[in-house]
Length: 90
Image (cartoon, rainbow, N blue to C red; front, side):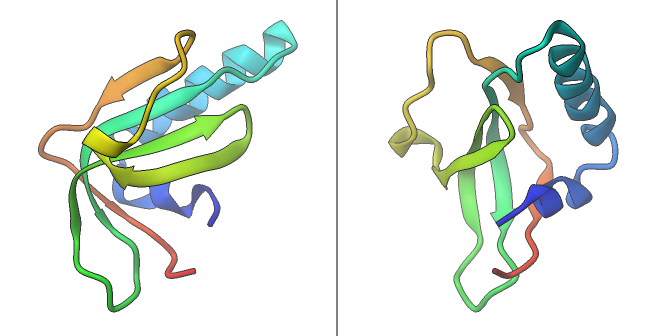
């Protein structure tokens, strides 16, 4: 999986890019959690909601039900309540 999950969030993607861009300028990518989203992963699996997508630096670390994902203490959290994220299907 890649950052293709961000394609379904046209209003959120600039915020995510800004978060990662600032982190790159500071010399370290930060942990980012997109929480409470509806995730459509592009496969035959059912839609997941509420779901969390956890990025640890530039790595997609976890995608799953919000209640199942533990967030690092230093995590930047963006609440996507009411928004859908579409994955690339693989």
